[in-house]
Every structure is written in C-alpha cells, then in structure tokens.
Amino acid sequence: MSTPVTDSKQVQTLLEKASGLDNTAGNPRVKKVVHRILTDLCRAIEELEVTQTEFWAACSYITEVGQTNEWGLLAPGVGLEHFMDLLLDEQERNAGITGGTPRTIEGPLYVAGAPVVNAEARLDDGTEKGEVIFMEGQVKDTSGKPISGAQVEVWHANIHGFYSHCNGPPQSPFNYRRTIKADAEGRYRFRSIMPSGYGCPPDGSTQKLLDQLGRHGQRPSHIHFFVSAPGYRQLTTQINIAGHKYVYDDFAFGTRDGLVVEAVPQKDAAKIKSHGLNEPYSEIKFDFSLNKEKTGAPSTIVDRAHAPAA
Image (cartoon, rainbow, N blue to C red):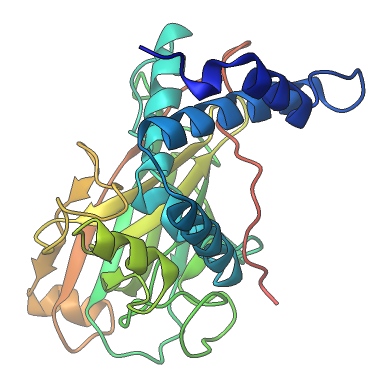
C-alpha cells in the first residue's frame, strides 16, 4: 500500500510552511491550530477523493455563508455549537464542577444593552396580539440558596419568529429583550407574548446545506437566557416550550434534558382580571441553578461578535 500523499515529506513541509511553523514570528497558538486543521483537511480531501470541482464548490459555499452572514446559523445547524457545550460540560466535570442548570447554545441573535429593570419586566411593546405569558422563578446556587441580585438577561422571537434588531420587519428598540435584576431572594418575573418557532431562511446558505443532508431547518418555540452573579459561573441557556412540534427535533440541537418546560394555561377569571387581561394566559415557572466560580476552570463567558442594537 502506497504512503498517503498527505504523509509525504513534500506535503508535510508544505503544511509546516503554510502554517508558519518554519519561522519564529506570529502567534504560536494560531500556528498550532492552523497546522492541525490544514493537516486534517488535506487528509480528508485525499481519503474522500474530493475532486477539484468539489473543492472549489466548497470554497464558493464558504464565501456565500459569509456574504449572507449565516455562520451563526450554520455552526449550530451542523452541531458544532452543541459540541462546544458538550466539551465544556466535560471540562467542568474534570475540574470538579457538577450540577446546575444545563447550558445550551446561545444562537446568533443576542443583542447587548437591553434595558435593565428590577425584579419584574414586561418584554413586549404591546403592539402584537398573541398568547400572553407570565414567566417567573428564582436564581439559586447548587445547594438551593437564593442568589440575591442575580442578573437574568432574556431575549426571544416575536409571534412571527423574528428578533428585534436582527431580522424581519422593524420592531421597537429591544422589543422582547430585557435585563432583569433579581430581588433579594433571587426572584425574577416577566410578562411577554409566547414566541413562535421559526426556521432558517428557506433560500439561505444554511438551508442549502441542510437540504443536501436531508434535514429541516426548524426550531421550536424557545426563550434565551444569560444568568450571572458575582462569584458564580455565567450560565448560557434557553428553555423550550413543551408540546411544540420541533421541541425534540431542533435543527440547532438546542434541546437538552431539564430545559423543556410546560406553559400552563390559566383560565381562572379572577386571575385573568387581576392581570388586566380579558383572555386566558399561560404561566411558566423555572428556577435557575448556578455553579460557583472555581479557580482554573474554563471560562463560561464567550467573547464573540453580536448584532448591534443600532
């Protein structure tokens, strides 16, 4: 059996030079990562007998993903964002950190700077008619002790599956987005409208690949959160509303055990009236559990580009 071309001296020299391992300038970490990725990519091209036409088609596709700004969709869509969560789970276990609310993907639609409110918020601007929801709960540590003043950042889609500042028709600033400072007992509460599930743009670059894989690009109804407090590890998570068609078939692999939550219909006339409503609403209860920070543990704060609020 002949030696793989990738293992030949000529290609190994090429890969070392291409990744800068033959010089002392540059960033050693970047060099190491690039060399490994190039080596694995060349090996895959050789073993899978990727043709020149297929190679350049892939390059065109990568360019298209950038032009359509869909890397934030493609990464979760092919499981990479979920893999990063699974990897961090294992790194935490190795560091002796266990328990707490499960993390799951952030997604590409967070916007910083949402208005800060104390304990209770209304997320929607009142312009959309939909199912009113009241969600409440408590932020605690893993022993069940309330975390006073914990910060709960929340964001979700509107009834059409669009996010303010990110996609779809214009919405009011920070619609369906707030930063809630929990009270002394770690309690938070908000009113909003039940978000819709949604899918990738049907003509977008992510859906183009999913079609080739025989997969859909749909997400269930869900609500995103960053939960944090001094001395605790930031939690990135989301809840998925039970009963939705795609709750256990999320194209972005965002559903995890412990994060599927019932929205309980409330039809009591007195309670409806007490909220100033004329129609039934739904109640969601969910407590967050944060792990204490630990020296030497991998960071849970991700430095990544986000959509601007402007």
